Length: 472
Ligand code: UGA
Image (cartoon, rainbow, N blue to C red; front, side):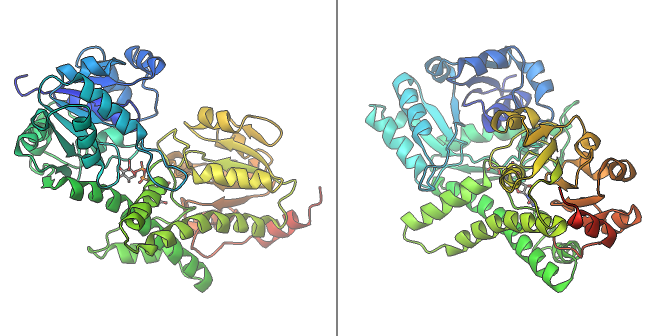
């Protein structure tokens, strides 16, 4: 295709791998670079490595053709017009983002550059990172006219990453260079013109030919702040509704009704107002901390972010107290757990509130029977099977003979369980739902004692009395 651009994507994690196959889906020619030879070999062989909808199909379609995988960053740099840096920016001990991988990649690009390149940061990075990349390039002897650094933050969510990438709400291109902006516009042209959505077999999502996503051009620093501020704002929305859910519990109101009433206000909107056991994952916890740290370094008081973090940490402790108040004592109790991933639709357990809660419950002397549709293999690596935790084959198996069942991840399949079957499997029909997946009335009809977040509890008092008096 004549409009095809040669792209290198450095990093084959959630963002890099998804970006690589999606750029290929948009018609570009892509080299995806990772320094982990094992990962590269697996990707070459068509293993997608992460649980992500549409990824296996796209990988199958484009691997070793429109997307090639390699460890050779120098060769990839030489042939690419644009290089996207999508390596990890883990949290350092102080809360800052650790940018050593970004720096290492920039230095290596500098050593291999022979013609003009656009270097686009896709990793979530603090403001001023583009300046640092520029300085690293210059220190390594690359002259200013040989490259431009662009901030092109990515807003995809795990679990819906491919559809989010191809159907973004907006594309942000932060650059002060018209030359770089033009190349970035060409790269995203299949989306911004709507051409991609008219293509047969295009992946479905919220955009279509007549409502393509806008491309917003900003300064590099603004683009860097847009990414951190967006994630921090979404985390704030979740902490806000979680705090409201605590208020609802105290006032005997229903947070789902409150969230619905708030969300109908166009200025607020209904999304990211789902209360629960707190946000987790590899982005929100790290990005809120990094943004707080950036504010501190720039001498700006942003204590609001500390409160967002406090509410989030508290939400797990509150859920633990709820389990305790449902079961009285925790030592020796056998609990079924549905969900280990940090959210439904992914096998990612990084900073998962579900894993944190399982650990807290084990610490309290409980034994766990856990099930997750995708994350059990990863969970077993950090919580190996033993007397404290066993892994079940399905939700009913996880409920077998348990004192109570806990729902900790919002997998859609957990919202459609056969409640009679669950209830029959459990020793006591008590469900503590940290994700509000069920209507409390339905639980009552099925004679299940149901605790959820921010809603009045439906008690079956006999059940509670029985479990409390049971001595082991
Ligand atoms: C988040 C952002 O939503 C993406 O826009 C961003 O690109 C990404 O971080 C990133 O920086 O890479 P992600 O972490 O994949 O995406 O998942 P989310 O769907 O945002 O969920 C994050 C956490 O918040 C999960 O633990 C989820 O269960 C929780 N959550 C989300 C709630 O508790 N309530 C809600 O209403 C929404």
